[in-house]
Structures are given as C-alpha cells and as structure tokens.
Length: 440
Image (cartoon, rainbow, N blue to C red):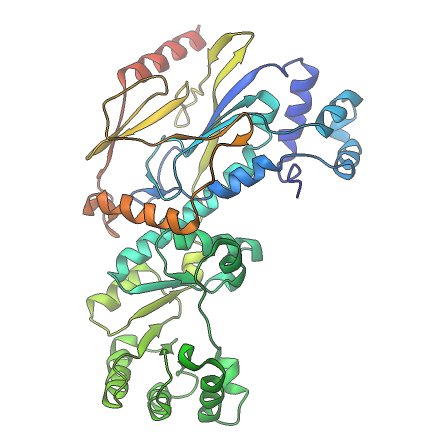
C-alpha cells in the first residue's frame, strides 16, 4: 500500500522547494534520536524499525494522491514537473539502525538515513511517529515486566489505545519490551505475538446465574478457561470456580483489594486441589501497583495491564527528533548542526560504541576498540539487505540487553546517572569546528 501521504504537508512543500531549487542531486544524512529522556525513564528501548522499513519500501504516490496535491494552494506556484517527479519517486537511499530491543540514551541515534535530499526529508513524520510510539510503549513494558519479578505480564490496552492501529502496534511493542502476549488479535496474526483473552463481565451478566455463565464458558474453552470472578462477590465466584473444577487455566480478579483477595482466592483453589490454577490480576495496573502487590507477596501469577501500558500514561510522549547532520553536493560534504539553546545537535553521522559500563558516541568513520557497535546497515540502495528479526527475536534481544544494564539503570524510583554516554574527541572537535564556522 502506498504510504507517501502519511506525512506532514511541510515535508511535501519542502520537497517541492528542493525540486525547484535544483537540489535533487544533493544527498542528505538525517539521524533520529531523543535529546533527553522522559523524567521517569532511565533508558529508551528501541522499537518500530520493522514499520520504518515497511514505510520506506512503500514510499510512493498514486495518481489520485498527486491529483489531490495539485489542488492545494501551497502548490499553486509549483511546476508540473515536480508532480511528474513525485509519481516516479521511490526510496533509493541507505538506512542504518540499532536492532529493535536495544536500550538507548540521550543523543544516541535510533537510526541514520542517507539518501537524496527529497527522499530523506519526506520520511521524517512517519519515522518519528512509528519509532517514537513503539519505543515509548516498549520502554513502559520493560518497566512493568521488571516490576513483576518473573510473573507474566500481558498487554490488555487496545480498547484504551489512541486508535485501533495504535492498539496493534502497542501489542507488538509491549511484546518486544518483555510482555508475554497481548489481547490484540491482529497483533497476534501479523507479528506472531501470543494472544490472551476469554470473557468479560457482560458474559457473566448475560446468564441468569454466575454458575451457568461459568459452566458455558468451561464448555466453550476447556483447558483455556479463565473465570472472571468479581462480577458479584469475588470469594463466592472463586468457590463456584473451585466447585466446577478442571479443566481450568485460571481465575481473574479485576477489582477490590487484591492484597487481601488474592490470598483468600488462592486458599479456596488450593483447598479444592487446584494448586496449578493461576490467578490473574487486572484493573488499572501499572509498574508501581504491581511492585506493591509483589512486595506484599500477593499470590498473583499473571498481570494484565491495559491503559497504563498501551498509552504509556506517565510518559505519553518521547520527544524524538529527526535532524540533518550532513549534506553532500558534487562531492563536497558539509556538516550541519543546530545551535539554538537547549536544542543544539551534533554534526556528522555517528556510531554508538557500547562498553560494559558506558557508551561512546563517535563519528561513523571512527574505529574504537569496543565490544559492540550498535548502528548496523539495514537498507542499502533502497533494498533491504537481509530479513529483519521477528518480534520474538527482538524480544529476546531486548531481554539480553536489559540483563546487562546495571540494576540502578532499571530502577522504578531513582533517576541516577546510571549509564554514561561520552563523546569521542573527534566528534567534539567536529562540533566545535562547525559551531565556529556557523558563527562567522
């Protein structure tokens, strides 16, 4: 499906301007990064690369879209040749990126895009949206999973996501961040994410008795049965579940004081010989509430987290930016940077060198003796060079990377300078030279 119009208008007006100014042969390098972390985050977990690649592979314009653009007053003075150019536009550039599931820190590029100027400019909006949203959700998921201390977490937030499509990608990103699955069926089909869900309160209320509702659910789902037991009286619901016995995967608590309810429900199930039956907790959960439940030793096996996860409610924006760092014309390369206060950027394409205790942000031409270099080629000449990792592989990569971060870096409550990011002397010197040159 063509995705060219999934962008801000000013990307297209700039593209027309570049065309009219004769800048089609210039090649630009842009980087996507965050200047600073949200106030309650110690890292950002990169996600969304697969959708970024999908966009670049489908960057094109149909006749109907071009006819629409011609009607806009912003293009009243644009030559017809620009629209002919737009009809043939395809992404022919290079993309370098960190693997999905990689923890990043301020000023470290999620991706670097090098292409003819128009091809590099138009993708800005889509790349910011997909990388920013999915990285935000994956980071939140990693925090929630950390709080659960080994108990499973399932993403249940599609109904509260900012759009149905956001719900799909929230399911994907949450899985990369460490969740065991999602309630979103489409995310399951498209990305291979395990899906969970049985029945709501409306199921129970649609029958004349709670027992009848449970019996019909068990007949339908068998070993996958999960009873929602708090529609009327939670402990009575647990007793009915225990009376019906196996097959039974678990029961779900969606309200009430779970610190006291969960042990009581556990005892009812255990006394009935249902020790393997799981207790799932849902209902406005987040990492802090889960931390409290775990600290109180509430016998909860699975947490279903909805609104707080699918919207990253406490940090709902990430502040990703997409900035030009180089421009090449007829073999001459110019390094570009923004110098404004609190929003300055670093010139030149970069590489992230990761050591055991810190990172070094350096020029891409440097070769440092580091255990790991994070930015890797993904597309060359507009072509994907190898298949991207699956959501499962990205999830495993995230778990491995997070396991290597210090505990303080993953704290829910502290904001220590837990991970240092140094600039290489060459990068610092380049910035100083560009700053002095611009100031002249």
